[in-house]
Image (cartoon, rainbow, N blue to C red):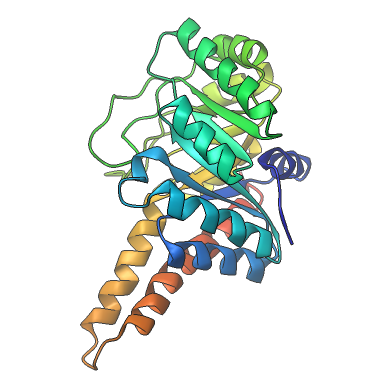
Length: 281
């Protein structure tokens, strides 16, 4: 249907009190699986890739493929560059046609975070792209190599940060973390509720893989509009491939391709359904 700005999808999600799934991809099969799930459910999604993944999935290959897949999709799709580490890479993503970007300066002091993010907002405005930023520390890491702990977002700082940077979406830390959780996390919904009261832009939940369905739905009811899913899709793809290679008949590339696509499709479809189901309380 169309490649769209992330801002459009998050505004629509807010109007319907729903969450918009942002699904990380690493190859063609993941792109296809995510788009198939979106088309089958008639639900717009966000395709995204984080800078930490580029050593396995180069931006010059993934970027054009993600953007073209969005253009050809039967539903609206935004394409987002997640957890950018340098302004130079963020600029490259914008040049490829990404409709939103994120420079992650959350580990820096508050004022420095504001300064760097504000520069990206100015850069992205020239492309008509939206900008996401993070305040507080989401645990773990995008590439699974470690982490820097968790520090919940301060609600008062969040209001100041949004106003001074001019961002379109704010990623918050409320006990969530990237990667595989040993057990389902206990999210600080009281902190989230206070952030929602002080911030006018849509909120983003990183580290979605492993949060319970009820946890997602409660967070969405309190202002989360973009929900990131990465690890769960990679795990689902891997599990589907393992089932395929365990079969006794002769294997081939084309069935392997279908297995990877199916693994992604199943995980994306399940999360789309969760994010569009109201919180039952």
